Image: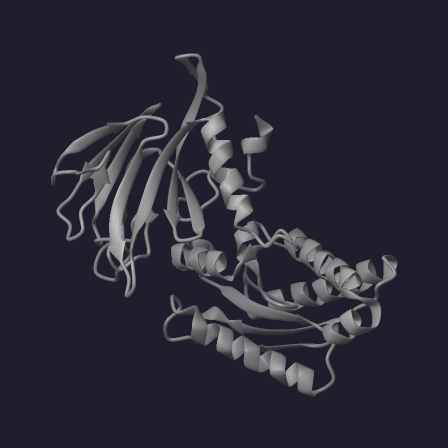
Length: 314
């Protein structure tokens, strides 16, 4: 069952969407049941949470406690409902909401309590400018179903590097910006120096290899894979927990590792990095302002010669 264990995951870290799976297995109906997981699906992104005890579900806002299962969608109520889980029994209770929650094609009444089984889905209708869409919450309690949904998570990743894409990264930050791990944190933007020349002079296969090398070294320095993403082209963005001084040192070591690894592969490359303390921004939740500051630092690096690191510190 080791494939269900995520390295360095910790129990009780409810807002980090990489839960620990208990070792308690229950034989029932010819299937192997394990501690239940809730997959929250929006657009092209899938988050997952361990279900245990009493957990609130809703849209985070400043005037109520941060929900155990946050859903960032304006059509989800701030106190949409709650889950109660004991062993393999999962119950959901609906609260009074604007859009409601659907189960098996029918709306769940306010205060109604449902007992959910493996594969059961709760659907919250949402609406955009041009279409009606849904937030879907799926209970998974068997190896087969958990692996199926995790394979869908992997399928949404960038095919070349295996990293999450921009939308998944933004969704991850929406769900974790209030996590105590990120009380001190830095956002960085990394750009491969002269990447266009690499493609022009050596071909796109070599360029692809360079991107994979950089992605591999990035993955090695983070605790959770969702902390980093391929932002687009040869740009990568990530958030690391710690002070600016500590992260500055980590990023310099990362830059050196990329230089050494690429040289060993016969593809010597350098990177430029700009970063910003996330708490400089007036609104930590709105990542666009933080990205803009880090991008400005990256621009200064590029203008002054590349292969350097610069940051905006708090």
